[in-house]
Length: 71
Image (tube, rainbow, N blue to C red; front, side):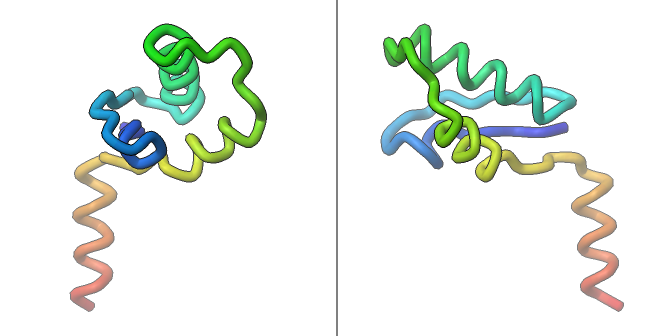
């Protein structure tokens, strides 16, 4: 599962998007920018900023990372 917290890009924002794929998270984030923030043009740079802030929320991955650090 992937997650984007809008507050990581827009100070004070509390909205988030969560989906199975990065592409779907980006689509939802862009939709939010258009709907809630009145953005009419989403530049490629904004898409890149969103992608940079997407995190993996898969508990299995977190556990594997923790296990790797303990070795």
